[in-house]
Amino acid sequence: MSTADQIKKIRIDKVKELKKQGKDVYPSHCFRNRLVRDVLVHFSSWSETKKKIWIGGRIMSIRFHGGIAFADLRDTSGHLQIVFKKGDTKDFELVNQYLDTSDFVEVKGFPFKTERGAKSLLVEEWRILAKSLRPIPSEWYGLKDAEERFRRRYLDLILNEEVKKRFETRSKIIKAMREFFDKEGFVEVETPILQTLAGGATARPFKTKLNILNIPLYLRIAPELYLKRLIVGGFEKIFEIGKNFRNEGIDKTHNPEFTMMELYWAYADYEDMMDFIEKLFVYILKHALPQTEDPLLINFNGQLINFTPPWPRKKFLDLIEEATNLKPLATDVRTWRAFLQAQGVTITEEIKKMDEWGLMDEVYKKVCLEKLIQPTFITHHPSALSPLAKLSKNDPNETERFQVVVGGIELVNGYSELNDPLEQAERFKRQEQRRRAGNEEASRYDKDFIEALEYGMPPTAGVGIGIDRLVMLLTNAPSIKEVIFFPFMKNK
Image (cartoon, rainbow, N blue to C red; front, side, top):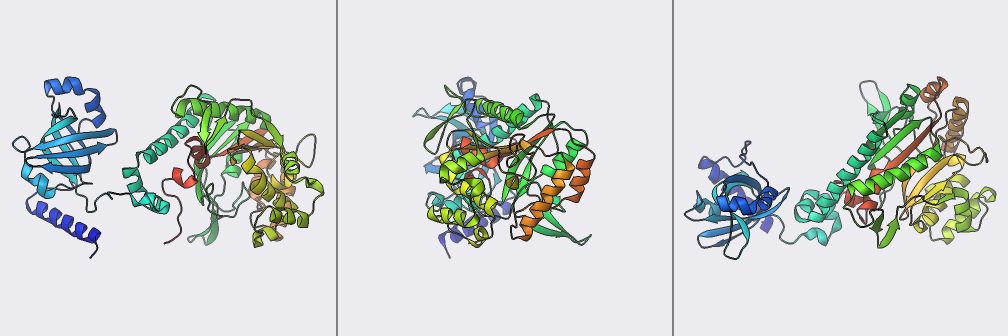
């Protein structure tokens, strides 16, 4: 029997013994009426008056010295030493017999300082709220094996306060985003996650089946086409924050399940949206992150990033040409593949199936992105890579589309939405041709969406922001797994 199993057996025996004594070691009602933070804030006055309070939390450590036991109790607000003392603490003899690290307890007592001046709470009454069967690891093995931190996130949160703070910041970022949208008059909505067609993005979907109707369904890769239906229906400013699913690779910026914010703004175009995005980022930085002398400066991956508007704007095709010394619109498939191979990119079966547009996008992702550190708008993507965006007024090979890249990471994708039903139908047909040629990520022909457009959709700008990547950037996390509570992990 392993040491862990031995400890578990001993603790199970303690649970049985306590139950025989009539003790409820998993009660539902609690007497806790204060947090640790309250004790520390009011320590001076409460210790002077010996104010009696109940606090509760997890026992992080415990040590015994004769007739005294010192324990470190932690709740969501902080740590406090609690002191059990023979003669002052009811059922003191049970502390040594039955109390262990990782147990949840609540204690009644008053604040005082020990002889060494440590702020503490002298326990008069106590009881177990939840008896733990496993001890907290004394040396967190996750530091040796990062994957174990993600597999057992609960232990990671218990033992690494910085991890918890990062997730609290994530919550503040999303809250600030909602606050900003509310101030700008946007309405939050919800659209289906299970869809009959996976549309709104170029990605490989997860497939499932609705048994009762015997029809195939897909987990959404994007909410876009449903949100646009709401614009057709009369909403003018809407957004949705929710999960998307893409059956693709896993790396430091990709997880099969991820959180996306998508927003649509009627009577606006992509240039309005770029100005809007700059304002949004300024608001988030000033309201969600710890304030510094210059809140628009952050550190990411050892580099100082400045979000002060305006951000530079660079055309997609110009960026490709600068990086490759090739003319994008005059380069064939074999040349693109050769260039990628020369850059050390493995030519997979998937890459072999790509047409010149897909390969151009691969060059952008594999060669150009990592060099874009400061916030930059990449604009005017080719129409073949942007089936839902309006064509540029000045060049039919380009669209009114933009992406925001920061720290080598794509954070934002937006455009003037294509609202011409005839052109949208033709774009869908071309995407279907790309799909039949082997591109599994090409968009499908959505007949119902075309019908919705035929009733008329006003000029509209739309944008999507990857929440996980945004949090990763703003909290200086090395991987997207650090900002998702339970990232996808391969089987052991």
